[in-house]
Image (cartoon, rainbow, N blue to C red; front, side, top):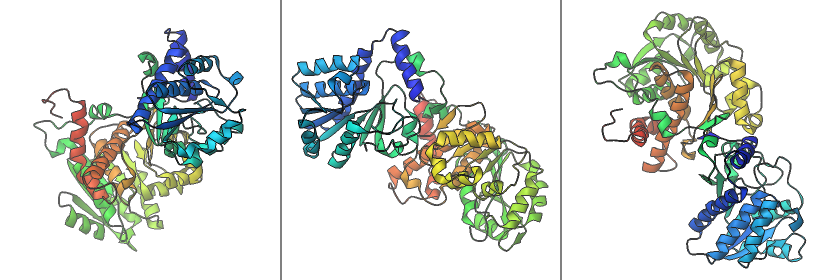
Length: 518
């Protein structure tokens, strides 16, 4: 599913009317019905609601919701943060329909407006239809007062298209914004759902079909949300007569005396995601830990100095590089001087597709040149900040733009980790991930992700596809952990161990028959 920013949303609205003959009134009516369905889900036995409307078409959607609620038997107050003369033509039409069922909206100049606004805490639900996707200035005046009243009330909120006060494209807060329990957006998801404060303030969100013509929704935009069908069609298949040598050989360069487990996590995830062979190259203590915990993995012991790999270790790996189809560099290696020198030496002669993660990314931020090979860079916001010489706040402010900047700067595929991880590459739309959950906020998850992506690279997926499929698969496995173990307290090892089951579930969603053999 493509993601539409404010400009693209306006274009879809306009072209639906001018090119396909859909009327604005039809779109508004369907939008109101979609929001009212959410109201019914939250108030299955009825109740009392307040609908806050603005002067634009978002407010018109709110008038439809208020009308439907009244007809359904709910007690309805409708407060308008504007004057009647300010309403758009489409909203005035819906206002007339609302009055016909007996609801008299209270406009901002009415002395009752503030009194009713202060009583919102006594209602069962609020519908926020104040502002739409086109707003890009700080909220003020009646709308600001309405937002304050909504947030003070503590009453659950359903927002129409976007929580009022959230910038559609960046997710930034425009001074003040509504904190919604549920957001119903229309046609396509919007960028604010995946970044900034909008990510939190949207609450549980859904995308409703309100009758936009399908060709408009299928046009390419700058970003799309990955789905199971897309991933299932790309995951490598295991042929009946295949052997381990046919399914990729991955090198994992990871670990140090103080962080021996990172290499095991990467290797375990690679094995659980279908790699034929995995070799861990690390200092003796790391190799011993891997052998004890993961007997399926091979090891390549490297010389060490002060508990980290020494620079001379590069020649040991380069002598064996023809054995490998892909590599993972960085987890748990530290940023000590010998490691920086080691990576600088090995990458000068490295042409094999690679995942560059963790301490290897820190080495890049210190000036070490990336190898002359296809790479996937997998920074979390802190690592991305070091790569782009920016603060974490700047990185998180607009994650879409951040990834585009990193791709342009380093010329490689980039995966920015976090809720709704983002993948970017030259000439390709950004890919957004919608799997995963807050239980993943624990040590080792990034190592597991690197192992999955490395495995897919070694099985011949290009970096952009390997990174995109890898993050979806990783999050899907974590969702199984949350379901079967608990929402908090599962580990990166648990996520690795559930990867085969996650793969089966992803593929089953895309299969039309019982004979799918993926």
